[in-house]
Every structure is written in C-alpha cells, then in structure tokens.
Image (cartoon, rainbow, N blue to C red; front, side):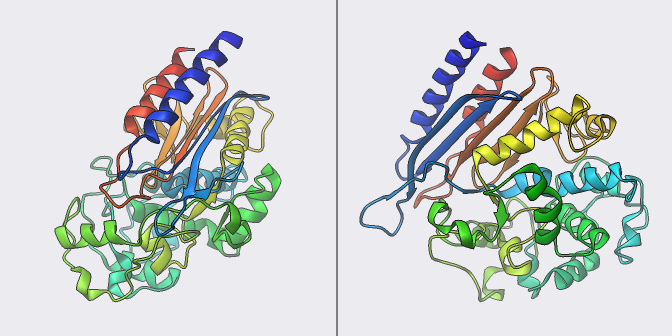
Length: 365
C-alpha cells in the first residue's frame, strides 16, 4: 500500500502540474484525491480560485468547492433513486408516464438511468421560456423523442432532469431539500449543496458566463436544436462564482436539478464514494444487492444505472466543468479529480487524458 501511495502521489503531482501549465486554456485550480475505505492515500490541492476579471489571482481554499456538473447525476439523483429502490418505494421498471403523462408510456425509470429513453441529449429549455422546474417538465414532455426508446444508449441531460423531479415528488419536497435531508446530512457531506451561498468564500470560479452554451445554440453543434441565441435575453457574461455553469440548471431550474447544479469538495465526494463501497460490503447506507445492480454494466457495456462502468468494473461519472468521480470496487478505492477547466478566455482544454492516467494508475495498483 505504501508503494502504491508513493506511485499515485507522483501521478497526481504530474497531473496537477500539467493541468495548471495551460495558461489561456484553463484550469486555474486542480484538486485530486485517492482514498481507501479509511485513509486518504493522495490529496493534492493547487492553483487559484479565480483569475478572470481580477488584477491579482484569488487564493485557493484548503478545501475548495467546485461546480461538478453532471457528477450531480450520480451523487444526488442516482443516490436518491438507490435509496428509494432500497426502500421499495420506487421500481426500476415503473413507467415514467406515472409522473409525466405526456411522455411515451414505454419509457421506464431504468431507461432514464441507462440513457435508453430516446430523449434528446441536450436542449436549451430556457430558450423556450422555462423558468421553473414545472415549466421545464412541460417543455420536455412536448419535445418529440429523438430516438426510439431502448434503441441504444444516448446520454441525456433531459432524462436526469426528469429523474430529479421524480425523486423530489416521491419524497415530498424540493430536490435540494431532500438531498440535504436524505443524503448530505446522513453521509456527513458538510460542504456539498446546490446554490452554495454559505460556502461562497471557498467556491472556485467557473466559466465567463454562458458563452459555451450560446455557441452550442448558434452552431447547432453538437446537437442540432432549431433555435438561435437571439431568442433568449438572459445570457450571462460575467465570471461565474457560485452560479452553476449549466444553463438549463441555472435559467430553467433556479440552480437545482437532477442533472447538474451540485457544488462539492474532494473530501465530500470521498465520503460519498466510501458509502457506496461500504454498501457493497454490506455495511453502508444502501443494500449491497441494490448498489451492485447500479454499478454493473446494463444493456450497454459502459453504462450502469446512473454510473458509467469501465472494463475493469470501475463505476464513475464525468462533469462538464472539469470534474471526475469514481469508485473502484475491486480495490476498495475512491478517485476524484476536480478542476475549473472552463475558467479561461480561450478554448477550454479537456481533462480526459489526465483522468485516464489517474484511473489507469489506480486500477493497476
């Protein structure tokens, strides 16, 4: 274990230095963590919380809080679905039309979790005028399916928007409230929330407004949506600090959604990962058989229920602002890489090569 820790520490240091050496392309902050069920094996935090719009870079907190984008899908939405399935309050094969009558009756909760529902991958719901979760749900139900249900995996933000509202409805409160009461509090995630007002002094800045999504709308790339940016007057242009980067989450859902909106830290993601791994060993907050079903591949070799699944059996998920999270069941490890890669005036760089290097080192042992 000591030799592995030394090796991982070297990999983490190399990744951090490489990511921070791309001026003009981001990120300004990097945090890496690798932990087993009891101990931190690697912990590295470096950089600045903000550089855009400042004469001098802002310092980084010891435990910086990052916008983790779609990691919300596994920590919040999948975590709550696992809890409801464990309580037998929700069935994986329940039709989604039970909550949303405007949707195809063939679509199930399982289809949403496995991205097999046939929904659009992304759609600028706010351009259609949605400013509340209820209005967003109405827009989604009016959209025609892009694919036939169960015709293949098509990663969809819209599916997890629906799932977030389903778990909120089943638990009888807003998604942020049920997440705080059922997940964050019981698991000890003290620096995890939506809309991080109370953590503002530790929040890392993300993008310079909505420029990336505005470009997506105007170019129709990567999704050919039939709208243009001049149809929406609310585009943000200032550096985002504590405002979720995702446009649908911010403009249509007020910062709280099942697909994005979570702000968190390496230590808190580690605690969540340990809860998943402990459950697989029969001593965590969820039943072992339920968690095992979620973190193994389903109809697609790389996709479980909410979690993506690597060939080595690692359950993981990316987040667009520069976040990655994984649990490695066979090795009993949690792996986290958090950056603010969108905090740049240039084209944001990807972090997939660095994540692959870190995961390869962890899985190889």
